[in-house]
Image (cartoon, rainbow, N blue to C red):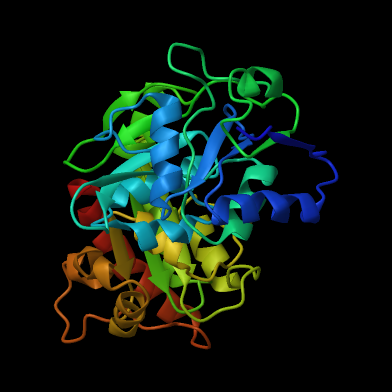
Length: 354
């Protein structure tokens, strides 16, 4: 057996050449001990059969128990998993990068896959530079605790892996929590760095997204009214978002919107416009839009959101031909008042069904 190569990486001044060296070893089928924020792990190229077999041998792990995969970007989840539920995106938004492993249906033929985005710059850079899927179980031999420091990680592994990275002590020193989302409700397989109560609170929270064009009037009104309803009901299990499909983020709500909402006892003077993004859509249970064109744009961005998108006016008890709530920008205050009335009618009904 060849001796293990050891390199030290300073986390405050990461040498990209050392990162690339570790990535190249993984890509070519070697095994690398590397740090994450939880514990040290042994990384291998998931696509290299011999490397994975060596990893099973070192870990003394049954072949029917797959290793989890580390990814460097949230969007990579869709390259490796299928039929991803809304709950997964809620948990990703809340806890990634971080110590949470999600078990999902694999895009490969049948089976499941565990995925995690670590909150560690050394690990993230190596994964990105490797350009291959990286499996990475904890760097401990069977019966030993998962290692939180470099010297514990390499104990018994000299000659069994090609490279080991010394990056000091890990931030958390406890393994990730593991959640199975392959069959309905959240199933906690392992309680690690994130506690069960935290995971369940995020998973159970309903997320409502209001969408208009500029996110400066209609969706602001809807969000403010819905949040007031939720507060008045004493509920903490609902989160309300708003966004626009065609704006530059960072502008204030219109003066008319601020004034009218003030009459309702709602202060929206601190609102800043936000452009809608895929993450908002993916994690929302209910998406309420002002016009048909908003619905079309959302479905164009995220086709799987189709069954969660509705026109807000569908919930209002108002007899009109059009189900669009028109944009009041550039119109007199009376137009804003009429639109606020329509939105209030709809919010009353939405609040009863969420």
